Length: 191
Image (cartoon, rainbow, N blue to C red):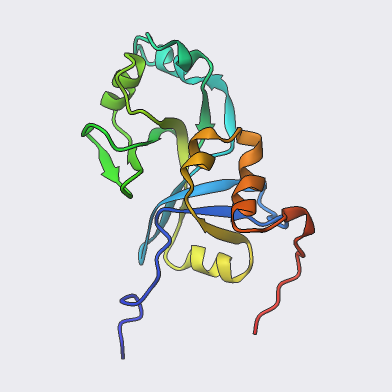
């Protein structure tokens, strides 16, 4: 029997767009960047759910000095419901951080405090977003949800990740592949 995972098309470095009929309130109208997807499951960071506090406030809470004034305007994101106390920084590759994984030529994810110190000092990566928590799926769970029309997928677009206002990312990610979510039927058809 051929190895079914050998020819598997993994979705790392893709955006997951929640379909309008998403019933789970934790993911309703979300866009999630997939940091990892393989036979063991998937891990992603939701990029359009801002929390009610800034990166500067979060850094102050963990005694990291803030000299970068932009951090007083940048909101921390709710990256997902798993480990909401754990921080993740999705960023442009730059320096090597203690716990950093390069996902693509344009994006890395880091979960160590050294990047937060650099960000507070204004020495962090050029582009970044800070989140608490992540979204996760077990083996074949995400694939089944996609088959069930719970998610759309699209290649990650940096302008959506870094430049689009949070409240517009869901619509803009779908528009990137030519889909108007207001006109999308919630009925699924399979050939």
